[in-house]
Structure formats: C-alpha cells, structure tokens
Length: 153
Image (cartoon, rainbow, N blue to C red):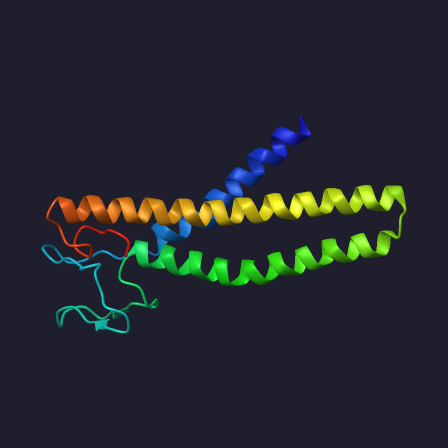
C-alpha cells in the first residue's frame, strides 16, 4: 500500500515539475504571428516590433540528429578510456589473486563482465552506424539531400 502511495506521489511530482512550468510559462502570440523554430547556432531572432522577446539558439546544432550524434560521440570518447581502465582493473585482480581460487574465480567473472560490457558498447555503436548509413542511403536514393530530409551524416 505504501508503495502505491509513493508511486502516485512520484508521478504527481514529475507532472508538476515537467508539465506545469511549460503551461504556465507559455507565451501567447498576437493573431497571425508565428515563431520559426529553425534557428542557426548563435543566431538571435527578434520578431516584429510589437513583441518584446528575443529567442536565441543555445546549442550548436540545427537538428535533433546532430545533437544525438554529438551525444553519442561524447559517450564514445568517455566510454573508451573507462573500458580500458576496467580491463586494467580486471588484469590487476588476476595478479592480486596469487593462486587463491576464490579470488581467481572473482577475477575471471570480472574479466568476462568487462568483455561483455565492451561488446555491448561497441555493438551499440556499430548498430548506430548501420542505421545512420541506411537512413542516408534511403534519403539519397529517394532524391532528397541529407540535410533537408533530416538524415544523419
């Protein structure tokens, strides 16, 4: 029973933190006026003279695909040294076992987990590359350029 109450409170708090500010901070535009969401990085857009707000693109990406690609590249750059450190740690566990059966079993288990983690890490990266290449190929074959169709480069 306490678990259900906790879950309900958690969901209500997520709703209050995420949805309510979006609704309460929304701005009404005058009739017939629209805001174009496509803004170049660093570009400032100021609407007609009747409005008083300025919209600046805070990120350096023009598309969601570019943002996702940058995030995956950052994860790859951070994950690679971490994987090497875990491999070195597994090696040290073998050295420090010194013939102790329990410690050797633990070191073998640790090494297997590190290898499985690296395989999952690299497999996800390869799968992402395959999907991006497929999307780009389909966009090119349909006669659309990669940037206008939203394809990842």
